[in-house]
Image (tube, rainbow, N blue to C red):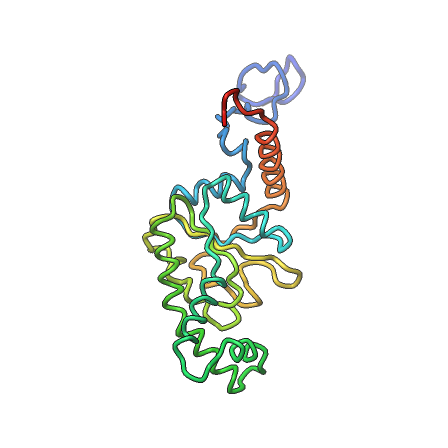
Length: 239
């Protein structure tokens, strides 16, 4: 409407007096999760997984895999299970019970061309060892006091046996503890894959990339703590 006193048009109703030119609603402060801030997104994600006993494939720069395993053992009491070690030990036991087969022959077959007789024989030996490997994972999971960290899964990919992990990636699977799989990240081989083969994940959220800086920081803290402990003098009278 036209305001004769102001010689200008104005709205019929005024919203109210203002003391400034606010262009947004007032900012509301929310409580900060101190656990999230103190250990970052990676620490919070690992803590949540340990609490809910979920499965996580942890992408780690290949150069930091040993560091990452040590850090996870220290920060989350993770128990490490070397899948390659268990598989080789089981295969050696199988060979000892087979007539006419030696471990040297098995090693030679590992370099045989794909599809050859030796390669097929080795694949059969690996298949026979898988139930023992699965049982070893289940036993370790039942006895672990924290998350179970699976490392060195390369042979499972090489012999097309990654499906073995489906038992624990299943979202409906009941687990005594969280299961974490260390997945080395290499140039041209990144994401939820091992040796170019995709992991049998039930959901994309089951893969999480561990930041290298987070690993290095915690590893350095552990090293500092160890040096401090060695420098503390023993109490008088201690033997």
